Length: 114
Image 1 (cartoon, rainbow, N blue to C red):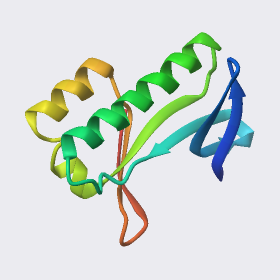
Image 2 (tube, rainbow, N blue to C red; image 1 turned 90 degrees about the vertical axis):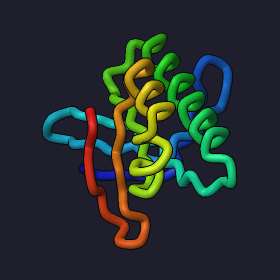
Image 3 (cartoon, one colour; image 1 turned 120 degrees about the horizontal axis):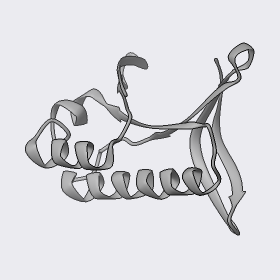
Image 4 (cartoon, rainbow, N blue to C red; image 1 turned 180 degrees about the vertical axis):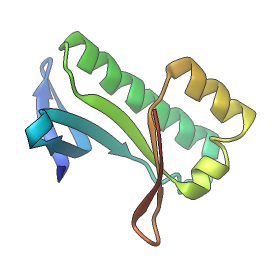
């Protein structure tokens, strides 16, 4: 997959930014990834903002009837923290968020969760 960072698109009259768009040419597959760091003092506020942005982008992709799959990328610390807590699990199930868990120090993907 070829990836490009910080993709700007004009959609429905607004400019939107997505952190990564990766394309696998030979399979005509494209994913969009919104990366969040969860480095705020209030984990609940950061979760709310990340989920809100995911829902916004997901709604727009649905409106456009896009085949691109959207993922939310979160650091392993956030995944093992607030996202694994009851509040995080409740939101993940209800919104059906696809996750990519990464280790920011090693710059590696740890887990994909569809």
